[in-house]
Amino acid sequence: MLMSHLKNALINSLHGLRQTWQQEKAFRLEIIGCVFVLFMTFWIEAPKTDKFFVIFSLSLVLMTELLNTALEKANDAC
Image 1 (cartoon, rainbow, N blue to C red):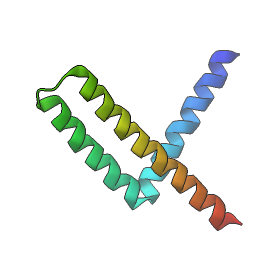
Image 2: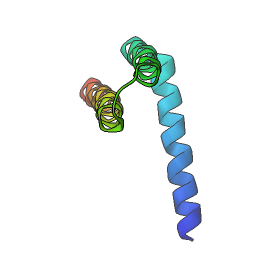
Image 3: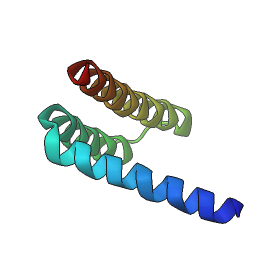
């Protein structure tokens, strides 16, 4: 039962990410920028903690963009 709920949640999350990728230019640009920064993070010699904080910051940027998109869609629906 729990596994089916988790599977459905994962499928819904991936579907939402796909829709956001297709509909939001800002999200696409941020993903491309994050991929570039992530590549540079592992290419440049740095302590693991610094790399962790870069990855954490990139994930916060993407989460904030997804939250912003959700709020915009909810506001447009009203």
